[in-house]
Length: 102
Image 1 (spheres, helix red, strand yellow):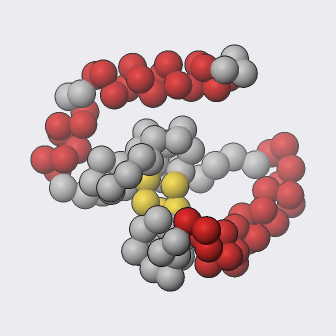
Image 2: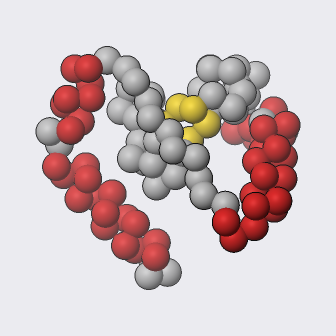
Image 3: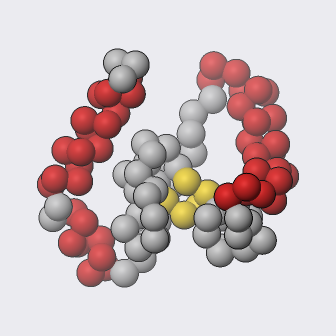
């Protein structure tokens, strides 16, 4: 959950260390909006954005690709993350495990 407006890009596929919580899902992460304060109501609050995305995926079918998301933030944060090779190794292991069906 993030306090940015609904549908605002919060993290790219490799995550965003400037955001509290886990954001390294291997796909873009978008805000559920400032009204989504309880995980139980997250899909209700984000419904317009989720339905719009589902319609786009359905319309494009197999040609659908996730949007390229690049987050710009504090350069010090970006450089410390880039220097952390362990994070990218963990990401690659997670992606390999997901592709192999865990």
